[in-house]
Length: 314
Image 1 (spheres, one colour):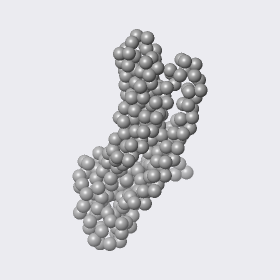
Image 2: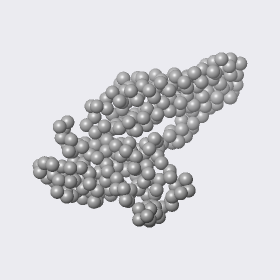
Image 3: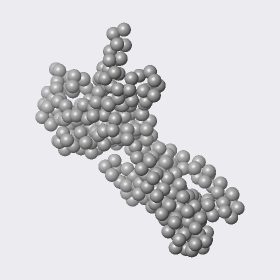
Image 4: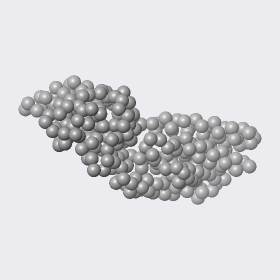
């Protein structure tokens, strides 16, 4: 029992940690129940491998502990599977996620298996350390350690959102002839009068103002802007059919100020909901840029704009 209890507690706590992070939301991924079955099974395997290591090392079975390294290699395939799955369904999206968003999702699903493994490892270590005190002490210590480590890792994996790096404000939709513009930035050419009237009657728009030079560089990334358009269309819905490309939301950046603008004809016509939806979009890990850390750019946006103006005048 001194070996079984740590392994069992570690496997259970690691699987629960994976279950905590496995939820189906507005992004419609993973699917239910097939996606749940796959990811929970992988989470259990990862947790069990982590839980086996401490008892194996204590008993001198270093070969069993080496399976952790083998598992880490195999879990890399999880990222490839998720990436391929999302790419296969990308053509069915009215507003695609974009390659940057797909890569970010794939990384997250790989990392969450490591979270399950680390939680199982921590729970098993704590349970093994007090195994001589009895079954209840061993199980309780393992459960407590697994809970603490799971919560800590869950918070550490929480990424930033657009609302953390930018100020999102509603804006007015205007037309300069057939050109759809928001805050002076041209978005697209809308040729049909009926489409222009629809934008004016039912459309909403936002301006996303970066808070600093780092945010400006991040929002300039095409993958981040495509993620914003996809998330907003998913949350609010969109009045768009496959042959109505003029209603596809496109996020454009003002090269002079770094502001990003976007117009959309949503099902839920609510400016406040639109602002909140944009603020809630995750900042993709692969799009983060930090030019301020190079020491060449001023950290605040006002100084950046002055410096940009000086460069353009030269």
